[in-house]
Image (cartoon, rainbow, N blue to C red; front, side, top):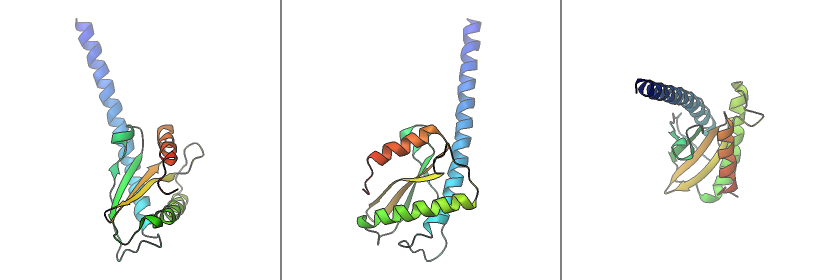
Length: 152
């Protein structure tokens, strides 16, 4: 019985340690992505901010899995229309790549550092999912979302 309790305790401890390490990786990825997105979105020509902004994201991984490093941004921009999304996505993707190059961010397995994995507008709020491609799970997420791309 003692061996069973000790074995269970060790398994629980290892699981908690793994979850904590994963959360640290996600938080660091979120910080990097927040900084990149904040810099990039302010340079998109169709989106005019009167003053510098600071944006914070929400994890997308709650739905897609804990190893996915993708984040959602919601910005109130009533002047954006659905037909603008393709142009915004293209320009934002370019700006994120420029940011990654300037900061010398390292790519995962030859993939781009960041991907605008989803973009939509609802009730005057622009929603943008940005993936920080740090692992295979995130790349698979980007590919899955691309199959249902709303801007095509």
